[in-house]
Amino acid sequence: MFAIRPIFKILLLAVPSAIGAVVVFNLLTMKQSIDWRTGLQRCIKRLPAILAAALVCSVLCMGYMWTGRPYQGSFKVGYTYPKASKGLTPSGTPLDVNEIFSDQVLALLLEKHPEWDVSAEELRDTLSIGYVRQRGDMSPDNLYVSTEYIVSYKATERTESLDKNELLQSLSEVYYDYFVETYGRKTNLLEDDYEELSDLDYLDMNRYLRNRASMLIKYMEMCSKENSSFVSETTGESFDSVKDKAQSFQDVSLERFESYILKYGVSMDGGQYISRLNFENRLEDVEYMKNLAAYSVRLAAIARYDGDITRAVLVPTRDATGEYYQSRTKIGTDYFASDANSYLSYATNNQLNIETNNYHIDCLSNASGGADHRQKTDEMAAALKAEIMQISNLAIETVKDYDAQTSNGYVSFTLYRGGTSLRPYLKQTVLYGAALSCGIGVAIVTNHSTKGQKKRV
Image 1 (cartoon, rainbow, N blue to C red):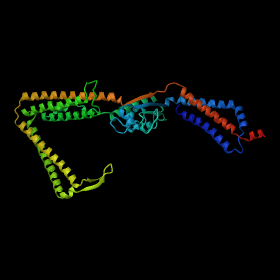
Image 2: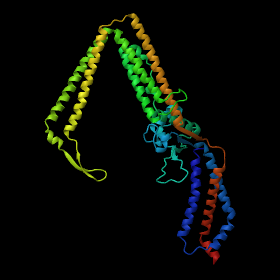
Image 3: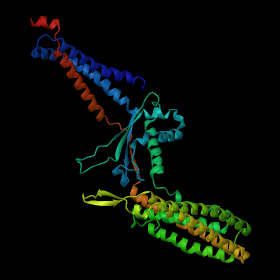
Image 4: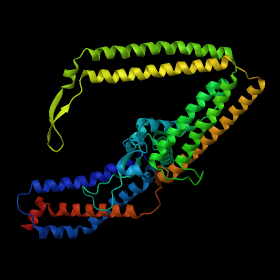
């Protein structure tokens, strides 16, 4: 059926084209004005033939459109999160609705349906997109970015065997997963099974858990800036309350754990850990000397400038109101000073790390703990793991609940499956038949053949 439809389409276009060509020919070859009265008489005389021809073509038009239903379809996609009306994705980047036809989305679609045996480019040729027009007036003071679009499908010879509803449904599902994965809020940063803790020494456990707690705190602070008053119905927590739990874990639980380790010098392998700390100190010392040398070089560069000249660099300028003033500009010494402060800060951190490592070495070297203390440390580590996992789960569920309430699922889809209503097809068929009848009538009225002229004589 699909292979025959192009032939019917050509016929349906050829008939009005031929009639139009006849009308144009009649007008171009006309040597005298049109005799409307005689032309209308000829038109009325041939009215049954005109209506019969229009009826036949209308039936062909109806058949063409009706048989094309399996090869055409569409669905509406609506972006439901707040930033969509500003033309942005949930992550704040510009929204590109044409991504629904992107290589990534179509590749995922074909990966889901390898039995289709078509390429991404062939699929892209069957799809198009248009926005749903806003209802109401628009003005420079009332700007609007469309958040609803219609994705249309029109089969080609390569895709005629595909089920249009299955294709559009699968496309919407794949695009939704892609959109949420790409632009939705990422909670994988909060997810961790903490299985690697069993491979770490106790002081490394403390450092690892401290870093995870810091990450949780920063994540919750970011969410709190977005909405500080939100309280999850699922967890009963706000972003600030989860952040406070992570802060308490860091300041109380981990401090108690570290203090116990250092008090009794507990380690899985004290000798090996001390050797590693000594090696870290050597590396830190090298970095300390480099940063200190860089700091000294920049101080020497600053000293080469005359202080009076440096202080006298002023540039005439005007402020936003047009008032004249002397602006002090940055010169080379300003950059040297900024670099010097940075390198001094690096050197100070190197020195602090060395002193901290030395303190840990002293505690491990003077270890007084036994098997009981080792067992107690293991119990504390297990409790810390359970506590941080509980806080992480609270954070994840709170964030998910917030996104579910504010994003409305990010994207919604309405698939138009195409019912059996004849109304839209009848409307187009009637318009086609009426236009065809008018065209034939105009061709007859403008006809000025020799036969007609002889009759008039």
